[in-house]
Amino acid sequence: MRALVVAGARPNFMKVAPILRALSAAGHEALLVHTGQHYDARMSDAFFADLGLPEPDFHLGVGSGSHAAQTAAVMVAFEPVLERARPDWVVVVGDVNSTLACALVAAKLGPALGCRVAHVEAGLRSGDWRMPEEVNRVLTDRLADLLLTPSRDALPNLVAEGIPAERAVFVGNVMIDTLLAHLPAAREARTAAGLGLEAGGYAAATLHRPSNVDDPEALAAVLGALARVAREMPVVLPLHPRTRLRAEEFGLGGLLAELRTTEPLGYTEMLSLTDGAAVVLTDSGGLQEETTALGVPCVTLREQTERPVTIDEGTNRLAPWPLTEEGVYASFRAALAAGRSPDGERRPEGWDGRAAERVVEALASRTGPRAPSGAREPAMAAVP
Ligand code: UD1
Picture: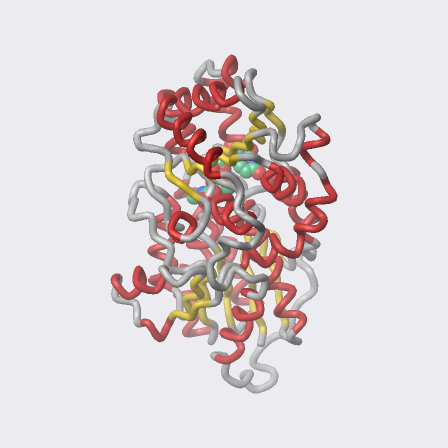
């Protein structure tokens, strides 16, 4: 079996790493495409190094742009790659623009090339159509031949949209494969100690969602709440490039100055910071899952979550919406009072470090015999 695995943006890299490893371990051919949606050293290269990812076989180099420009650029660049690689499967993960773009190209070329689309992290729904990620999720799931779900609550979402249940397989959470594999190194990394902080004595925050950072009022409310928390315990805020830009644009530098801001952190550093935090406040999807896996209380700075299992079974809670300084601060206090859960106690089913193996089993069991020899080119050498 030959699989072409797509990664584009920061939250994809930790999802593809265990899948590539499991494909190779089972003797399959794994090719990695990096679309280049994220391109900064700290948003991309650091993750390749940390996660032990191989050099991409194809680098599309698309970079930033409007949603249309970015999605279209990935599509145009991906099409010839797919034609050359002729895999059995195109594996896309998550919900970023690169995910949808490659799924769309593969769905259209698939019948001619004999390849199918598998979506890892299928079936998550926030119900908020204003989120670009929600549009990407719904459309990618509609295009996929195989829907690999991270939690049991995902299947009803797919069935409700008319997707046949037979097309879905529950595999668990590949992000947690990566978390468990890197936890010993993260505990050695002692990111907090490097910042002069004690484990359990600080809050960690991340913020990058357009709905929070592109709106001056929302950004002021969240940063105001974080500054209030910072009067009780230090708040570490690794800054996404988009957030830094907007905070400066909106004249909110004074609030940022009350926080311990850092550059975006690498995977192991961030995991270490999360693991040592008393509370995490975030609008990221991945961190909601990581805190649940670790037992660290989390306040999600969003109106709703596409990962309700982290609330029902995990350590997550939503801050009251619309976000206000008072509401976020009250949620922080409640999370702090709830305290940390013992390691592993709140981990949902399938968040066990073996999800990528189940992804590969699902792909392999649905792959027919290879086309007659000569019908496919052999895997090509790396293309710069
Ligand atoms: C994207 C994903 C989001 C994910 C997030 C993680 C979509 C629709 N959104 O949002 O789901 O949670 O990545 O980070 O795909 N920039 C840089 N350097 C980089 C990357 C981005 O400076 O390496 C800046 C650029 O100014 C860019 C902006 O950040 O315009 C936004 O980047 P983009 O990839 O468009 O979206 P994200 O907001 O990062």
